[in-house]
Image (tube, rainbow, N blue to C red; front, side, top):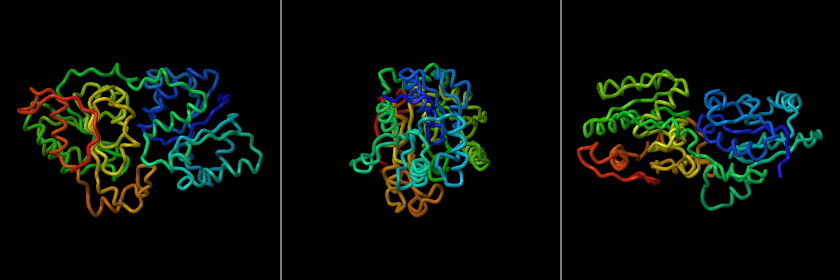
Length: 358
């Protein structure tokens, strides 16, 4: 049984990681109500709105996102943080491992050398690196929490389901992505949008990111798709989540918004140009279909057990081959998800599949 009193969870800092962690941390609090904890900086977990919805009580601080890699230059600050906050345990939830997070493992050795009394808990990389296939990151994280004495019998994967208020006739396009490698090309988005508009009475709403280039891309797409396409410009996470809850379906790059949609429980189509959905897809999401770019496997710099690439914005495989995810295939999945009478043809069918692009 884990008996730490002050725990520091090291994690990726993306919105999707925050969405995924909230119900896990809730189970953690239920099993270990005396434990207070810190977590790597995360915009989702920093939101009072979502903390209230998740009913978390014991998250007492967020550490700078830059510390998550434990680069040597940050060690003095990290040691001060640990000592000042009386942290007794560090739990690393990143799936990079000793090959890619070398300075974290060096930090552990250094703490032992200076006799710093602190427990370290990591994912089981002996198991991760030896297994035949990849496993969802949520499952790996739940494994380590289970080893700390946490039960997941009350795990609520749809913890934002009260936001599901399907009242309109819009399909969402999440065209942003934390890395260029994750972003499906603008011309393919536009082609898919034209198919939906031409064969249905549905409207489209675009969710661009915070970068100026993405805002310009969204404006260009709207000009091509016409007055049945709009841009959701409110960047407040609670407002974005409420808007997602009103959609009939969300089509998204591998982003945090995709995970928000899964926690709400609306149908989702995920586009994975550079990341592996076996690892990064929402855990046990209903009505979820993933399209995978086969060409990403040709990249010589892939971190296979991590499900991504060393090159965040210039993946050699994508640069040379592009992607083989086509709008026509995604449109067929949209038809199956929607009711038959929405389109000029098609049939209704629930989805929970992973498709290889053809």
